[in-house]
Length: 233
Image 1 (cartoon, rainbow, N blue to C red):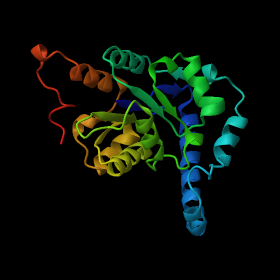
Image 2: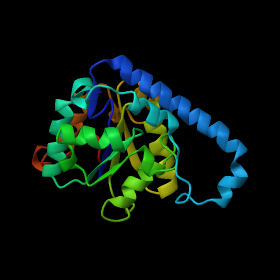
Image 3: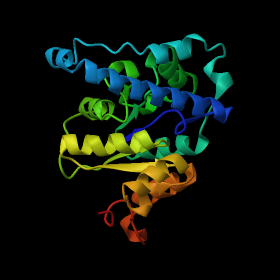
């Protein structure tokens, strides 16, 4: 099972500063939510996750002011498209886990670039009470794919932000099953180093991840080293 972040991983913004601004606003939304939660702790204990729907005021405002179509502001990552095809051909279940809204953005992105055909599940911000770095969205995606994972199952998650690495670690602890985070790019790499992840889990470019996936499915007769399967602690 392999789970993917969306922005900065499967698709890239034409203007990288837009992505940086969106991630900054998302981080601010998370910090504000944590602060507010301290004052609503008693109420939260009385409400279930199903009854309490997130308001997501910042996320909705961002997409409300968007004027351009997703084709004008995003480009799909061709290398990651090759990765998706390789995983699909090998029967690997896949999912998308994103802090972006699905309605009005995420689902539109997947449809515009013909990516929805690869994924058994898609979990966006409105689908869970708490977004990354909380583990809720990753747990939801794992639960929606086929069956509950066993201890010997391989579950990977690749993302480009610190919050992705932190969310995977929290999800692993909650599930009791190892989920291997793969850091894509500098921001996630810093979090990976802080978390003392194996160097094989740090991908500076999408091409690095493509080579790692290809190595994982290399026939045993051609095996030289399978760093993502046997040697990771």
